[in-house]
Image (cartoon, rainbow, N blue to C red; front, side, top):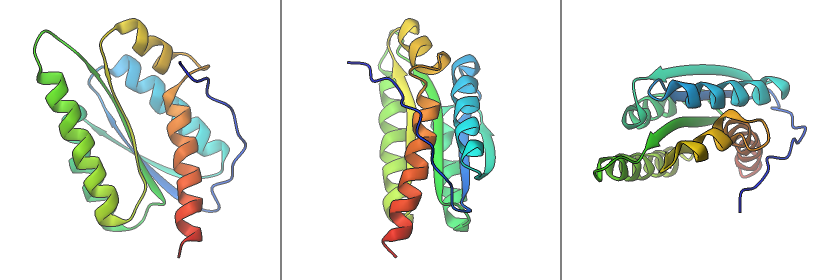
Length: 153
């Protein structure tokens, strides 16, 4: 069941957040990026956006950002559409595996919002609309995880 994104008022507590977003499938990614930035700025966070060509390039930029230790969390945004071959699945698996490694290696929340869709209508609902926008959800998760990680020190 598709979960509606609840608007929660959160505060960034002076945190700086990075967003790595692909340019490929820009209509969908740009909408998630806008929603994520809006949510982070509402929480009075500092935000740096890094654009990369496609979803497969997201982990390289996220790893480089993680090394700096300047961020409370890194949000990764991308959209992959399933085609006639298994290529999209390989890209999706590679991105997922790499982001998990970065998160564990650097002990830094890396929010995985790189989606593999089979149908355009699913992307429209989850990326373009405000009711289910996964960019908003990614920002809320980043804010919450930044607080959790700060509390574990």
